[in-house]
Image 1: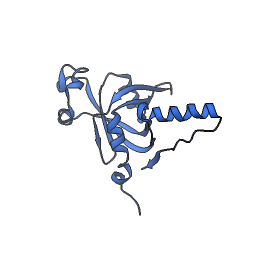
Image 2 (image 1 turned 30 degrees about the vertical axis):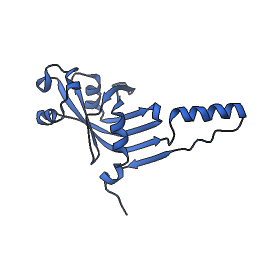
Image 3 (image 1 turned 90 degrees about the vertical axis):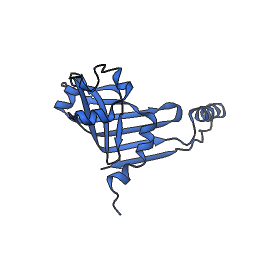
Image 4 (image 1 turned 180 degrees about the vertical axis):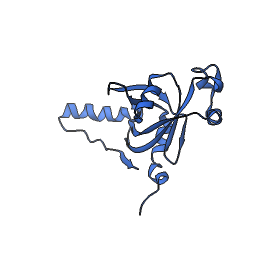
Length: 166
C-alpha cells in the first residue's frame, strides 16, 4: 500500500514543532555549504516548511541560484534529531505573510509585514530522517558511565528512527 505524502510525513511534524529552530543549510556561490539558525513558522502537513527571511540575506541569494537545502532540528536534551532535505523557493505573498506573522518576527522586521525586504521561504520536503531516543540524555550518560567503569558496552535502546522519501 502506498502512503500519501501527508501520511509519510506524519511522524515528523510533532518532532519539528517541538524544536522549531533549525540550522538551515544552503549552497553558496562557491559550492560551500552555509548554515544559519532559522525558526520554522509553519508546517503544512502536505510536506512544506515556512520561514521568514530578508530578500537581501545570503540565504536568499543562495536559494535564488541553487534551491537545494537541508534543515537540521536538534533537541540534544531529549536526544531528538531531525534532518530534512528539499527545495526552497521564495514566496512573495503578503497575505500569507500576514497569516503567519507573529510578534517574534517583528524583532527582526520592525516595519512589519510591509517591510519591503521581508520574504517568505517555502521548503518542499523531498526526504527526511529522524532519530528519537526513548530515554533522556541523563539516563544515556549514566549508562555510558557505568559501561566505562565495568568495561561492558552500554545497553541503550536505539529509540525510534525513521526515514521518509517523497
